[in-house]
Length: 119
Image 1 (cartoon, rainbow, N blue to C red):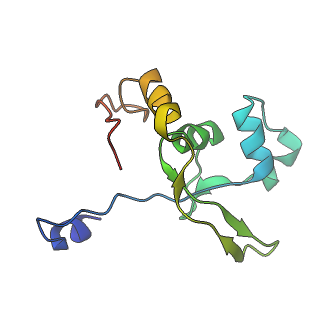
Image 2 (image 1 turned 135 degrees about the vertical axis):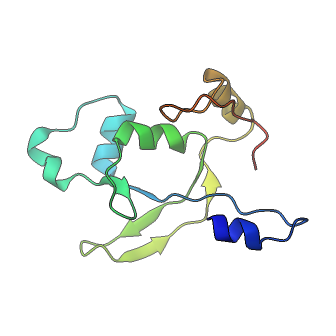
């Protein structure tokens, strides 16, 4: 990421940092409804980054409210069979309302103010 930032010309729009989260549908629904994941199915839960770091499903749902998202469908072998376009889950007034819920960054330990004018 640092190399890409340094290589970018000063007058160009810099690329946004990207983190890919993987979350299976059942876990996503449970996290969105604030339900617990069934412990018997925990071995089948996908809630991680694309590099394998485990992430709390609630955190992924929270990030999806303000970040750019894209749907990726995989088959039973984990092969990507559909890659959607990147878009915002919340936009316009809905996005502004979500951003107003928290005056600062939502990541633990970060108290930096967020900006509602992010791309």
